[in-house]
Image (cartoon, rainbow, N blue to C red; front, side, top):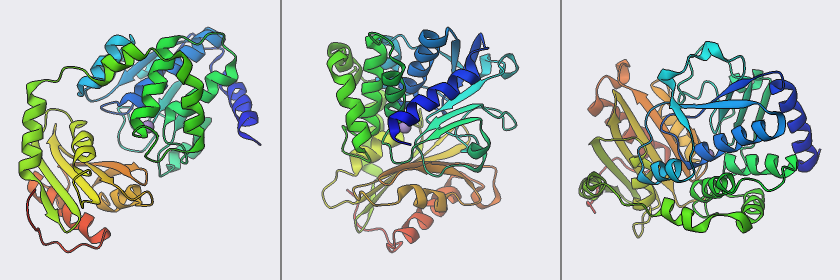
Length: 343
Ligand SMILES: [Mn+2]
């Protein structure tokens, strides 16, 4: 089955699942990023335009980054905190940019979604039991998958806010197509390009930033510890978990550094974000080894993330959890657990 045949077939399957519904629930991962937000917006748009089905988009955690808040504001993405949603009101639930059992979405454990669209490793056991699962781990973003659906759906003149959201989703998840992007991501990007609202996009990508953000920057730089070519930055209590991805993105650019790991505490759990410059770095696998028996995580070759809840015996408090995570990380990348210079 070639990809276009595949998309046609998938739209057909989707139609069968949603066409009798008045409204479905689309669930984002906790602390949603632009790829998740764009994918949900596009799925909502597709279902409404194509089959007249409405959607509620729900999320867990918080939208922390100023860029993501700007995206929601400028592109008018309507999202609802999961606490305000009763899942029993919906017979069809969709997960985008994450999977059941991945440990990073707010869906109650027993609730099984009918639709899962994602690009993360590993493919979870529960995903295989979902009615409609489209997991493309070779794609750099879920937004690229949704772009293909919209392309296939023949909706005339796709809403330019949806186009702009998807374009930003691809751009930010693949770091301007340079990180884990496939030819499919490039094709989606080119397809969207002519109709992107670039002035709006620029406002989203370059918002004003709160002063706290710069304080965190200072702390990240102050706290950075280098283990040969791996940099570890431990931030203590953080305002929002998505700052960690940003710090790792920044710190992996330090000259001579090949790995950057940022760790922080938020809402009774330890979050971390890993980046490498190695396109075959297996970060997703390393993260899974780091959280073995204490948490959950996943991602891609060059970028991955995880979470450890502090109730576990092996990770009973923040300090113990951080030490364990760092030790496991260094073991996997075969670096000695002897800190060198700071930044
Ligand atoms: Mn993604």
